[in-house]
Image (cartoon, rainbow, N blue to C red; front, top):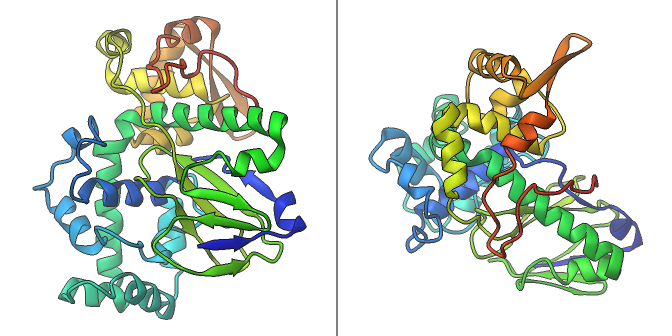
Length: 333
């Protein structure tokens, strides 16, 4: 795929401010189902019960290779699966049919696939709930770590930008991405040239994207380019000790707040795949131990880590290159 970037597009090159929860959930599920990918997903596949009805539904409705139907990866639903559900529900049947036919053209027809192509709301909802199940079981336990990896990658790109400009950034994202002005050449399954015409480009690192970059294009929206970044090493012994000390979910709340500047209770719940009541309970326990503090902001409350909490959460896993994740403040982009 070749993207033609004009001066307006180059001025609108941005990194994604947050992981697109639903899109990355489906993409990582697709990669985990692909043959030969289990080693690459060590630690994640162990939590994936392939015999569960939700897993079988995902395997049937999400193509093992190729593209995922575009309507299932809404660019404007980055924060939670619930936001994605709202965006998907508003998709017209005509769009759903076109997207499913494009994605499934090489797949064997089945009743469920026909129902999805027809925009059947029951089938769409079943797919959404299967994706929610997968996220909660497989991704949510590692979500704080995944966010750390993404932020660390973006921080390194910021340093590249300062030293080598936008040319340096675009030419060092991934071996499958090459900047040959005015064309950005991306190694995808498609052979096509697209003029961005001032829409801009959003870049998104994602450890579970698979070996190739992924490109999402929508009318009147910036192009969304997801590129693979290094998977983290298995959790260090000190990190496991934190789980043993306070429980995995509570430890993940602390790790998430060590990365995010602050989170509301709802954001904690969305990012960790737990209920709002559970997020509130864990926040209260951490606050009682003086590991976090809570401040009111209008009708919401914000939780932020204290110095004591940051010291406790400092022993985090390292990236593949040995760089400690979250060991130093990251630039705000």
